[in-house]
Image (tube, rainbow, N blue to C red; front, side, top):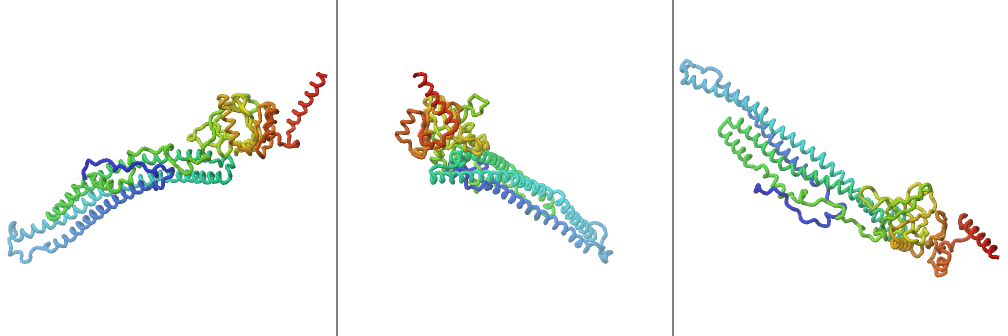
Length: 482
């Protein structure tokens, strides 16, 4: 394979599965594959260790066997007097044999010690390096993969929750608790998707770093194997020319392996399972998930409004982000940011049970009970919320949207003059459409259809006092005119 081919095979363009919020691909696939590859390298080095260890034992055994050979000629020749004891004769020949045989004994013993003390440690150190690399991948990258599995499971649960409540929205006609509002749940899904994408991108960067280090690491492994084989050739190859030729051939075979040969072959076979550094990172905006565009998740109207503080000690106003949802709730949020924190409503009013005040310029009001889960909202009764839009036209838009969300069977709306400023009055929602008579009375008196159908026994004490005061004032005017 050409050494110029460095880049990973480019995977095909992003398909729809890559844009799914929770992909079906196992996040440990790449990390597990790389860890398995390191195991293969570790076993390959282990084979070489076993081989060199066996050669070491062979030379140790050869040393002992040559000692047996030496014993066959250790004694002086019998009838040696018949031979010249000087060099160059038969006696000298046998003495030369003894010296050379002893050299074979010493050479094999020295070869055994050299293999054990010099060649084997090279492979043992390499074995430890590979084991450390395995630990790095297993306990580093795979740990990040487990974190991804955890956050993906959390995202999947919220997506399933969105599916349940969007289905419930259809079956119940949209009436549900504030926290079951598909709009709210969808924002929660986006919040968790953001956390998931951060973990996925961090894990992706870790995998890319590990992949990039593999090429250099495998070149180091190959180079170390070559060093071990060179040492083995120098130590054991001197025993015999034939053995040397065999070891040289093995060394040549090892030296002919390019440092990146195995890596390039691995990439050609398994490149589709590796992370492509050229792929762009995932973003929340491009992801898709079930019921993402369901009608129940689309607000009827949303935007920022100013609301008069309900704290009696404070006379100022506070800004907030308000949304009217198809589930007929008016939700209040701190802002429209779905990413910094989990978007939960600060206040939730079920509009069919509320009374809407007709807009007066930029201002309008809504009377209703906060149905969010806060303790204060459970204790508090029905209260009037005074809003201020950015313009009179915008206030009219909010009024129409709220009245539409309340539905034909929801409460009527009242004019701003229907109750004194700051007065909290309990009203009973209308059970039917506002007929022409109720609408006419609304124009004459400013009282809503819900108030006209209320029974006398349901009028609040404050309303009774206002009625009595109004009657007495009328009597005084009549007496003055007389």
